[in-house]
Image 1 (cartoon, chains in turn yellow, green):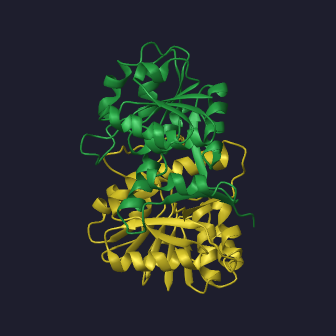
Image 2: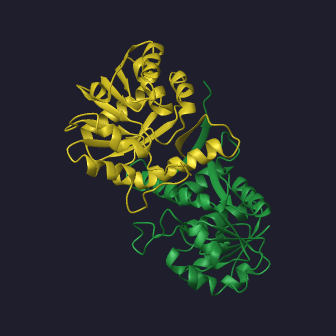
Image 3: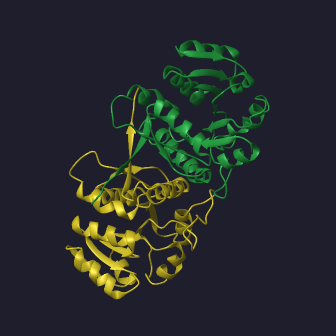
Length: 214
Length: 214
């Protein structure tokens, strides 16, 4: 698959690297410097390159949106037309200080994004684990059981692609329903962040859903 | 420990039974009928009895609040003074139709409850798993690894008691910080509910946090 990374920071940089190592064709875009993008592409050791957001979007089978919420308008202005594109968003609607969600329970970042892009197909994924765990999970992908990763969206074919990417990253994809479920997955992401960064347990945190039948 | 159950429905009935089987002294209160309370107390096969909310609150080391959000005022009016009491709440602030949280990201049900009861010590716990999984987890408690259960609150001694009850129920307690973290754990509970009831995976769902170090 051709995958464009919009926002090559902690999440986008690592996920792009993982997608490349899993055999996908990756274009990194939108970092602070062009050098960072070139370095990411080089270090990904796969079929990866640096480019602009428009390069990343062109012919992409999936676009990973991994910018800070405050940069959404800016990066979208640089991608060109996104009609029909699969946009995998892990951008949480955080305020500038990264201390709180700016969108309440009556909506979610994913839904607001989908309304901004009525012709695109938005899937929310990859926002419920810290970037620090990604390589550890990927490297453990041959040793079951895998950790879970929730995703949600309204377009079934787009969700199937998202699930494949999640699987390629070493996680077990968990379909949590329509896009409005992001109202729950986004706060869940903040709970994970709290556990990862504020409790001393260490940031390499993932989660797994398990069944216990009496 | 003496534990009072305020709201002996799906969650309260099962958790009270588990607490009794774990060796605690349990008073079931606030069900639709007195018969249900008597049956629960009998079936708990431990040190358990039926009573009023005031009975449940009297001398309790911990009170489990497990009523529907719309019943909070009603049950609290029947408990008498709760100064200094540990209140373990698993009541999510749901609307009457049980379709949405009625309290937005700028607050949480646990915080609203704590403001209603300024002299009590509120810990939010047991609201992030479906009642259907409780017996399965309890019966598996000797077979590690245990599933996680998040709890949060502002009073350290109260949280230590909550952690013990969580442990007694077969879960691994995960301290997720101050009470305002309920803004995240409550929506997380709705995510779990979505996975348990809406996706066909079955309601006996729990979760476990795991670390993956690269």
